[in-house]
Image (cartoon, rainbow, N blue to C red; front, side, top):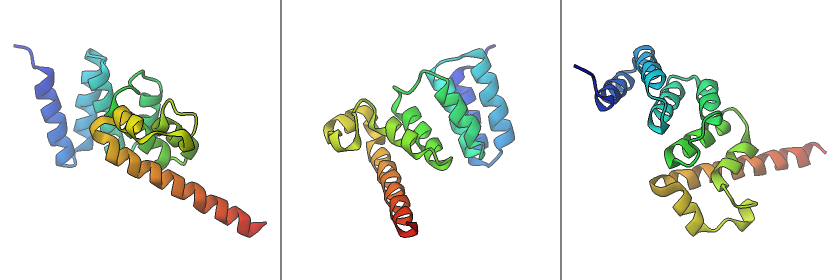
Length: 141
């Protein structure tokens, strides 16, 4: 009798919900080793992130090809933000736009799907951080 991927995902989410990150990571890594697809990659990266291993999550997402998945794109941008790679976070969030000033809201919503509101909130935080940094630099000069 084989265990389905959905049942493993349920166990991983239960472990995460009960703050048992060691077992969640173990199962997510086993799933990823067996089935390397967008879903298992995102699940492992999410598990790493929630366990506090942001660098592993970043590395996994950066070296995969799942940036087209809205959840993965948001998680990668969040990892970038948390490890102070603000320009990379902005680049991930704005996608194909050349800059934030040329970003069309409709395109942004289409790129991020159900995650658009959270992605926009994160983009606002990135911009706010950049403004704070510029203000601090101007004060010191």
